[in-house]
Structures are given as structure tokens and as C-alpha cells.
Image 1: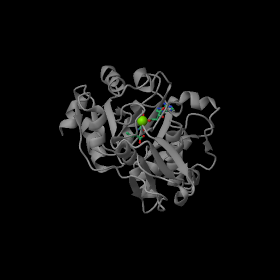
Image 2: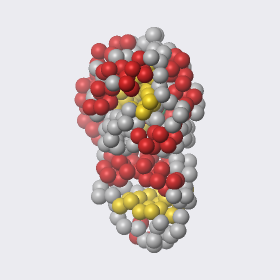
Image 3: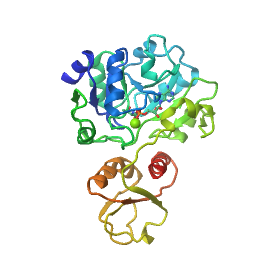
Image 4: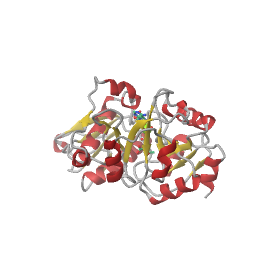
Length: 304
Ligand code: TXA
Ligand code: MG
């Protein structure tokens, strides 16, 4: 596989996972990791997640797999979960933006696993978008942002989940949910009952800079609505949700259920940008399961 060869030779490669496309480099190649920050225009204080295909690779990345981490790994890896652990000394500090912790994830999709197996080295990868843009869920979206700035795009299908992984800090006594994702808080608590949800004032937010940075934003203004039927939408406006909208938006994406809504969201944001949409109305959903992650992304986009 040519994509893996680029990684082994110090290149940077976009590849699909079940969440979103990532932009990868060998975690042990500082110059290659540096290229990721450059290609994305990513602030250097925002740490990268390192991707593995087998649990054996954890030993080279993390020093201490805490009991809560071990339980979460057993339950949810491979899958859309990132665990934050104490970083092993051999991992260059650029990959974790100088933090003494490291986010580790084992994607579940078969193409990602095949790619990571052939790379034969852990792969640091943020989402494969320009910094501040919505994460890419298709290889075309990667090309739209990064064509000419990266060595290769491993072209797979549209990603299955469409939102980024759940991130849990497992370094302290009580694990802390740093970013909502497809593994919901309900599912996490079924395995580790005392898990906490990060609050904006905690030190952990400082240590997960991605939570502070502007994120997931299309150019258009995002307006979250509980009552789509009542909106007066028209020209240059768009709507995405489950129930039908009022008015006559220029672009409409009706989704069958929350899963489809989450899967379609970021690509719809990009479609709206291409069409010059100025306002995107988004239907609010129930904050249970995947709905919590979807609402988190909608809120961040509306703040953008
Ligand atoms: O689903 C995903 O997680 C995708 C795919 C490609 O795996 N990756 C992704 O990476 O979304 P990125 O860089 O766009 O988001 C990673 C998030 C950021 O908010 C970052 O601050 C946080 O994870 N993070 C990474 N390492 C961390 C660490 N050591 N401590 C705390 N937060 C960390
Ligand atoms: Mg990202």
C-alpha cells in the first residue's frame, strides 16, 4: 500500500477512519509531525492523537495504563474512543504539543486498520482539515482543504460516524470526558461508573487545548432551533435536521434519525460554504447517546 510507504518514508498522508479522515505521520519522526502542523495551519499548542492497530503498540507510547484506561480499552478499542495517558519518554514532544500526556486511539474501520498495520509504526493524526474548518468525512473534502500540501490521500468511502472520537483523560484518579463522541457518556459509565464530564473552568480544559480552539465552523452563521417548522428561511439560507423546516431554504438536508444527522453534518456545512449560504438552521436533538456529541458540535459551530 503506497500510502503506508509514504508514512514509513517520513511523509504525511490523509486516511479514512470510522469517525473522520485523519492526516497522519510517524509519531517518532519529528520533521514529519511538524509538517502536519504546517499543512493544517494548526496552532502548535494543540496536541495530536496517536493511532495504533494493535494493543502491543501502546507500550512505546504510554508509561502507565491506569485501571480505568484498561477497562475502557477492553470495552471500546478498536473503536471511536481516544484515551489520554502518561506519555512515554521516546515520544517526541511536538506530537503532544509539549504535554506529558498522549491521546491514543485504535480506529475500528478495516481500511484504517490495514493502513496502520502496514505503516508498522504508531501514526499521529489530527483531523485532515485546515485548522478551524469542519472535519472531513470524504476524501474530496480532504482534497478541498489540503490538495498540494500533503503527500497522499488514501481514498476510502464516506466515513461511517462523521463526528470525531470520544476523548477521555485517564491519567488522574477519576477519568474525565474531554470531548463527546460516538461512545456516549452513558456507555462509558456502564464500564467506568465514576467518570466525570469536563467543565470549562477546569485545568483539564487548559491541558486539552483543542477544547479551547475555534472548531468545526463553516463560513455561514449557525442557528440552532428547537422548532424548525417556525423558521422563516429563504434565499442563501440552509437547513439540516430531522423534521421539515418552515419557509423555503435554498439547501435542505432531511435526516432520518440522529445517526444520519451526525454522519451528514460536516459535509453539509461544506456544501453550504460552496453554495455561498449565509445562515444554516440546525435542528436541536435530544442530548442522549450520539445526540450529546451532535449538540456539542452544533454549539461549537454556532460560537465560531
Ligand atoms: O476521531 C478522531 O479523533 C479524529 C480521527 C482522525 O482519529 N482525530 C481528531 O483529531 O479529531 P483532532 O486533532 O482534530 O482532535 C484531537 C483532540 C483535540 O481537541 C486535542 O486537543 C485533544 O484531542 N487531545 C489530543 N491529545 C491530547 C492530550 N494529550 N491531552 C488532552 N487532549 C488531547
Ligand atoms: Mg480536528
